[in-house]
Amino acid sequence: MEFARRGYDGARVDAIIARAKISKNLLYHHFSSKEELYVKVLERTYEAMRRRQEEIPLTGLEPVAAIRRLCDATFQTFVEEPEVIVMMNSENIHRGRHVAKSPIIRQLYSRLAGAVDAILREGERKGVFRPGVDAIDLYISISAMGYFYISNRFTLSMIFDRDLMRSDFLEQHRKTIIDMTLAYLTEGAPNRPQGDGDTPQEASGRATRPSETAAPGRRKRVIAKV
Image (cartoon, rainbow, N blue to C red; front, side, top):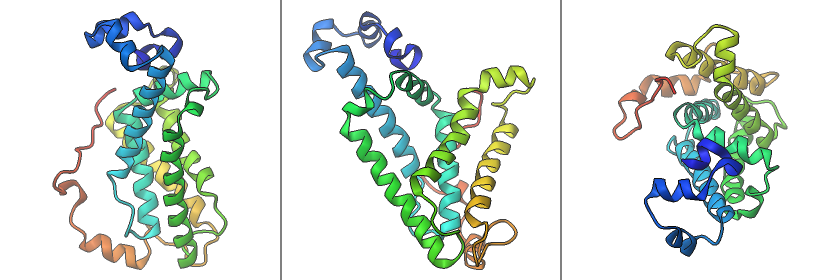
């Protein structure tokens, strides 16, 4: 919490141990330095983000439906856990110095890139996606559309006199991310989906699939103010 609020430079070890209600000796027994602790917190932050994305299964879905869910899950993570953005902003100030010390974070995103690439190649094979889309570039673009919206919510809300965290504006931007991503992927594809972006097979599956919002155990979407 201290790192998420104040970044690496602003966080103080004394504040961390006071919040955690532990002794300084105990903290340094487990972590040799503030930097080592920060790297571990970064790992937990990125792990939480990936875990949230993986809660929405993409395997077995048609390519268009899989991309739609990836966009939704990525944006929803930023909405519900904005501290992820604070940590990312802080780490970028340090030019990724601490991320570079963590093989765990790189492994997490290597798996993600592989999963997105598999979806793209399947969409290309079925003729619903344009050929040659780079999975990493696509994910960065999807993430950027949600990241910028949430990270700049305070200034943009003031500039445009609009509460960007209001539920209807959140849903509007969610749809924008999905629509823009699918418009790019399907442009020029030989079997480009029509209407709401579903192929006939997806439309059939959507019609017979139980309501996602009623699925047992699924996390309830939070769209309250952050």
